[in-house]
Amino acid sequence: MNYWLMKTEPSTYSWDDLVTDKITCWDGVRNYQARNMMRAMKKGDLVFVYHSVKQTSIKGIAKVVKEAYPDSTALKGDWSMVDIQAVKPVGKEIALQQIKKDPFLQEMTLVTHSRLSVQPVTKEQWERCLVVSETKI
DNA sequence: GCCAACGTTGGC
DNA sequence: GCCAACGTTGGC
Image 1 (cartoon, rainbow, N blue to C red):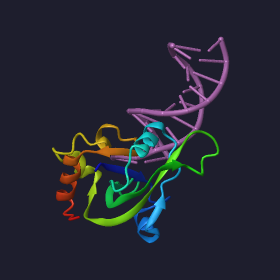
Image 2: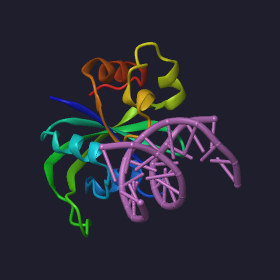
Image 3: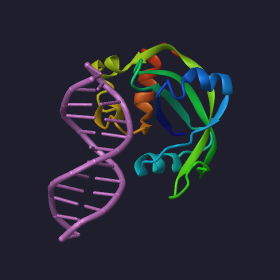
């Protein structure tokens, strides 16, 4: 089981949109590092959904329901997408500020490589986030 | 709206 | 292969 974090601009596609859709294909990723992260995802892996730009916080948990396959929205190039399904919202949103202040979360990719839109999360970071956000799976 | 950080493009 | 110019992301 691996853990991940995916960023989205809520004005484009929000956590609430995912809850409504239940399942969505995560298309439009055009960054090789992010693409490679998606290719490493396995069915059943869990994903934090993070809102960038506005709110800047972790909103909810989703799971991978379909592993990487070609991104049909890509007119050229070798791009992939995965399907994720909403699992549940976090108990309390985790603000970026909070992550930056938390001594256990300093190594999160959100802090160290903030621009990467699909990021790995360690088991320790994942569990810390569940504690901080008062979330039970 | 600004701007730093980063990624991509293209001329040489 | 280098690097300047440019575009994008995303925090503030």
